Amino acid sequence: MKYLRFSFDVVSPYAYLAFERMPQVLEGLSYEVSYEPILFAGLLQHWGQKGPAEIEPKREWTYRQIMWLGHSLGVPVQMPAQHPFNPLVLLRLLLASTTPGYTPNRWACEQVLRHVWRGGADANDAERLASLEKVLSPQRDPKGSEVKDELKAATTDAAARGLFGVPTVEVDGRIFWGLDGLDMLSAYLRGDAWFEGSQWADAAAVPVGVRRALKAP
Image (tube, rainbow, N blue to C red; front, side):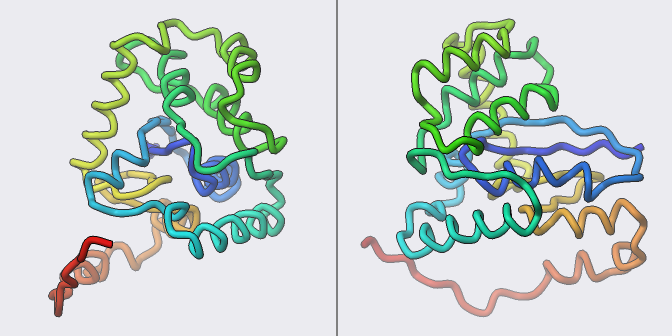
């Protein structure tokens, strides 16, 4: 059996689609998944990047692509009333649904991701959040310092492991990033001979030819 770590932020539509698609992509394999909520904005800050929704033309393309991907994959998806939005309340609620040292189960993650990505409502609407909290019945205070520190630590640790975006699946020390990384992950878990050769390591060993000097806007 393989042990997979699925790191995600509910603000990411790609994380939602990957979450929904992963059981089909990995059908027939023996694996166990731990679901790790992290703050995507924390990764962006760590690596000095902007998110897709912070670059206007990219934002427009991303939303169109998400709707197309949902259509082509047969996964129901509707954009929330506002995006991007602050996901902290939802991420903390997910963590609060577990005891310390454990990650949320798939059912809890499903409730929160579908809360955001189905129906087209405001993800942070107070009444909807209250209803979601009743469904999840958190074991800890989502607003407590323990849960807040846990999310910070998970995000910091994710960056230290080399994560730069969401969703990311880790297995055997390898990182598979994005919705489109699931097919590559499936090939690895099914024993594709490509991964036994040197190409995985060689691809990352290409020398850097030039580094762009970033200027303030």
